[in-house]
Length: 82
Image 1 (cartoon, rainbow, N blue to C red):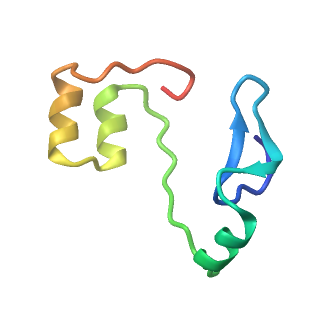
Image 2: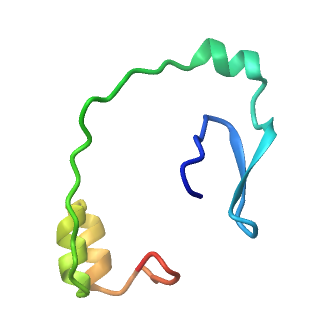
């Protein structure tokens, strides 16, 4: 999606990989009244250049129940995010 700024309630067209502008799930005034923003001066992140599922799971620091699901193949992974 590039550098397009997402806002709460915006719609996303997955086929064209674009945000749909002008249409929201909520009325704009409702969003304005019920959202707040603040600057985040630092966002910590770590680049993981390993391919094993175990290394990826460790980098995410998932909860124990999710880790068990990963190890027992209860969750099916697919797509380009893997």
